[in-house]
Length: 278
Image (tube, rainbow, N blue to C red):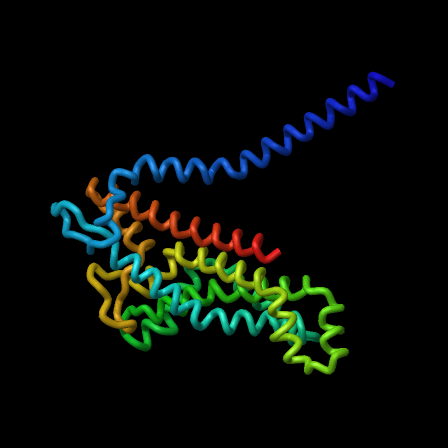
């Protein structure tokens, strides 16, 4: 009996160690990336990096201020159209979607979520750039919206499904109309999860580069209109990284550090909201 108990305890401890090692292996790449970015980009992480425009090769200083503004502008445009469309589509699938049409919508959303981002960039190029004969913030936002919307749709649907049926039945029993029950009770109950999904989708799109290569193009100056080429941090990091200049390489590391810092802030906010609302 003692031998059997010993083997069980040994197997239990070995399994726990294996699980812990697997969990460590999952988070290790993130810490390695953060350490590498801090090591190589910290020396260029200055206040002027986020306040100045890019300087020509050979001139000291320079920053990515126009890229930060451009990234926020493009993401804001994508979210302005993507949030209503994504949330309302998710509400339809969770509350009203039945039959073949709803199944087709779910399948289409899942397929769109799996399309490579570069393909969506090409689609944005064909949809906006070719007819307008120019790169623009609108084209970039439309490409990012196609990445943003599927995540919001599925998150909204899944969060609404977690709301107990008794909540809906109680509201209907009180004589509240179904659409009011959906908007003011069901959606409000699941609002924390929906908001978390929106923030996580935002964190994803602000780091996308491939769609912007075909739609935004980039700009070395302050953008003067949404129908003009626009700068973005991912584009600037890409251009700096492939250049032959050491100074630009340093700025690429610093820009990447700023970008991942933005992603971490948004992701942390999403986690905080999810915990507070529980």
